[in-house]
Length: 86
Image (tube, rainbow, N blue to C red; front, side, top):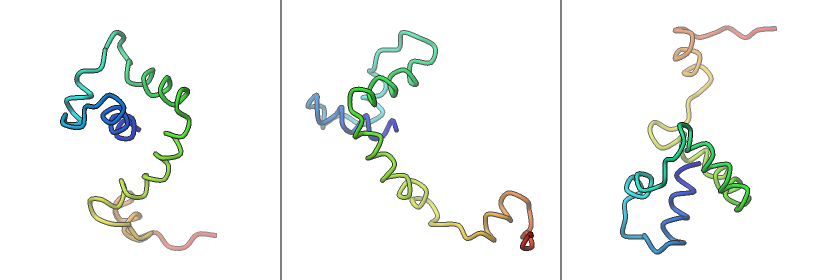
């Protein structure tokens, strides 16, 4: 969700020349879990940001290695393929 918020903040505030990490590092950090509060506050003010994030989720998971098959997922989690159950 941070990616969506930071990209939007860069455009809204005219910070397009800043890197995302610089925008994140310049946000006020007044509490221990300030990140959660910032996401909640932003999504309350801009509910469409959550929709945008949900549309981007597949891209985030596909970015590194593509989609895992069920067998690959079984091997990653259990160390071997799982036979069909029930």
